[in-house]
Image 1 (cartoon, one colour):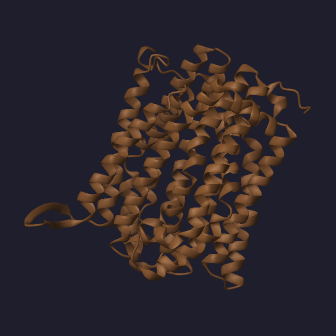
Image 2 (image 1 turned 120 degrees about the horizontal axis):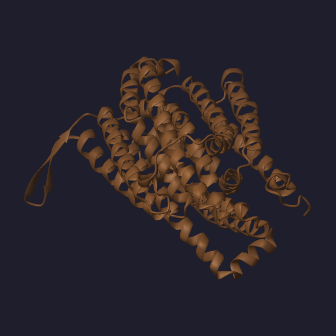
Image 3 (image 1 turned 90 degrees about the horizontal axis):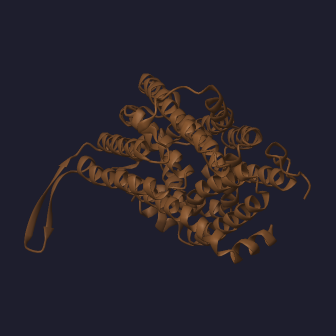
Amino acid sequence: MFSSIRSTLRDKEMMRTIFRLAWPTVMEQALQTIVQYADTAQVGAIGANASASVGLTATMMWLINSPMFAYAMGVLSVISRSLGAGDEKRVRKAASQSVLITLVLGISIGIVTLIISPFLPGWLGAEQEIQRDASIYFAIVCAPMLFRASSIVFGSVLRATGNTKTPMIINTIMNAANIILNFLLINPAKVWQIGPLSIPMWGAGLGVTGAAIATAAAYVIGGTLMAIVTFRDPQLQLAHQKIRFDKEVMGQCVRIGTPVCAERVTACLGQVVFTALIAKLGTIAIAAHSIAITAEQAFYIPGYGMQAAAATLAGHSAGAGDERKLRQYSATITAIAVLLMGMLSILLFIFPAAVMGIFTHDTQVITLGAEVLRIVAVSEPFFAALIILEGIFNGIGDTKFPFFFSLFSMWGVRILFTFLCISVWGLGLQAVWCCMIGDNMTRFVCLLVRYLRGSWKKELGFSTKG
């Protein structure tokens, strides 16, 4: 592995390729995190109940996004491998299947989420005082699901072709709209006093509902722009072909995407159960947990930002039958992500209270959140390697075993021991976050062992020796 890293660092063309693909997705992740920070901070300013109302459904949001991200990854793998093999016709066929995937997932998931929105907070064990706001927030954010599917799936299509700048630009526009609308819709009207000047500022004062409307509107903007750009892309030629179901190409997208979907759904269902267990600890624990999860996102921007580049380059290398290049790209991107997230984790460990203070003024929430952030900071470098390994396996289409690893670690480690910590041993949020770290570490070890053993190479036609 170290020889692969040294070889890649000396290869200026490969380093330029990594940088060209990675920096827009890293910036995109950073911008999304800034928006999440702004959203959480503005809601947090309302109070702990508002933070809990939004945070309660966050894990359910991850769950409903799972099929869209999973089948988008299936399309990305097929397109990137087809480009590596020089099969332009197959690239266009896969792009046309992405349109069908977007329509089916966007419409069906949208209907289901609107139906369950009145009941979800109660199912998750929320206290009565936050159930109404949590239900309204979830329903509004899920209403434009078709646009959310468009943003996710078509964004992956563009990244698979090596175009990572356009999704970054579109997400920048979407995030800017979200921040502006948050400010106008969450806060009430007020007068800004700047020296002798009094400037009236309009505000709807809708609180949690305003945050939901802002997020929904941003999805509409982002999904619309992503669809327009994808249909106009000259390489994909979607505007010049009939969108028809292709059994063989769709079948490959589904075969790759289904285990990813199962893995994400399993993990997110686990997250829902995880949140429901934490809800037993009270509103302060939910608020501290949800805000700390949001705060932590900034510290794994490099990992998730470089994951798409890892998947795309692994897919291109696999399609071209170039095992050496696949290993070089994989080892180097992993090393860069581990280094960057390792450095950021030091800051998280030293200044956790300051990070929590960005989002809330509640001293109880800050104190509890700071404690769990310091705990999780130690595991961030390992989490970085886990994120990149997931991207590599997704890119080459080896998605079955990662699903089994996730199933075991989520339910056999995180959920089981969280239940024991809360319901049997009477421990608090700190112990629960140790269970979360145990889940991530277990998946990391399993994926690393599979990658190093090389059993995945057989299906790609590579030698399993060495």
